[in-house]
Length: 247
Image (cartoon, rainbow, N blue to C red):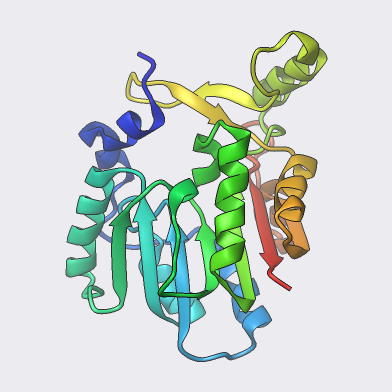
């Protein structure tokens, strides 16, 4: 059954697949956190804006690896935030984390400026409208401190042979498509909704068009090869990892 993005993430069965009572980080996420630490070079009292926090899995990891003292986390789904708040109580982090239910494209911050913005969990993949994606990047840029940075992970058009072939076919058929080449139905648990898969060039353009500098983009396959980690090219999702700075 096809549903809207927000409806999908409000579903309790979907939330149950995402919830983790113990926080965790993939090795490529730690890689991004370490890039932030290196860039900010020991700056104290750091603050972070976490878009698409879901049930909060990465929040303790961001605090631990980056040394963040204040986190503003948000998600489009009210039920996700409810579960996130429960986890924050269990993790004893309610004194350093503020949560909010809000569409990332509509988020504004007049009271806070942040040292780092994170868009993990492939959140941008679930934004099919290009104008909305650009608005999220624009908002991210505006809420950063002068020496702030952004990190994130998105789905890649190049991955398993089946996925790569699917988007290659869509590129050939581009003149006849009703939506962008990167569009694809995604989802699980019997629910489907529209998703957007990036290319490196496409992701770079999103960041560059919204004034970000020092843009770095690497695929999961490239990261794994660089770090000596095993990577299965027949099954791997080959996500794109990105880092960029405000100035």
